[in-house]
Image (cartoon, rainbow, N blue to C red; front, side, top):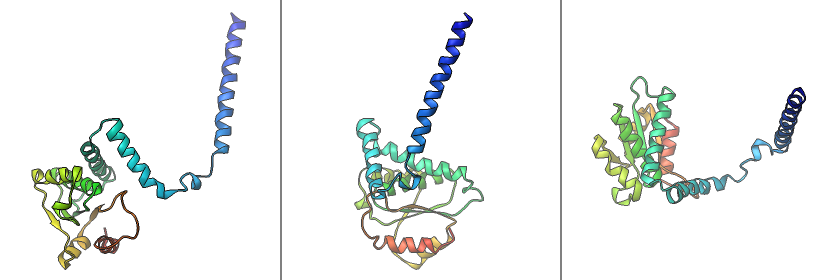
Length: 193
């Protein structure tokens, strides 16, 4: 019995040593962190691939993914203490799915009792699919969406905001950022939010 026990202990440590060596050599052969994602242009494609996989393979509706994304933003803001002291929150929403995430954020924040202003860069007629679905749910929470017109009172809204949720552009962006997005982004970058 003692010999069998000794054999098992030796065998255990042998396997532990082999596993340790395997992971040790794996770690020293790993490329430097800066080269793990050398093709940053492929990241939007990867994000779309994950969405497609979740929707088409796993059967999760896009509306549900959008709801979870917006809720995750709110939960992160709460966890970081950004929603204490009743901040003035501005949601900037584009016409695509990123805008839909912004609609979810606006609705969820208002349902939690926060003051939220929503500025859209698109006409309602330009919204499609899941983004349109979540836009239509804004009325349920009493969210009023204003159209971006590049007027001074909208510039002041950006300047006065304590928090700005950028839901303007998502993974579909390519090329140079043009107006009205470039204008809005510059105003946001110049604000104190």
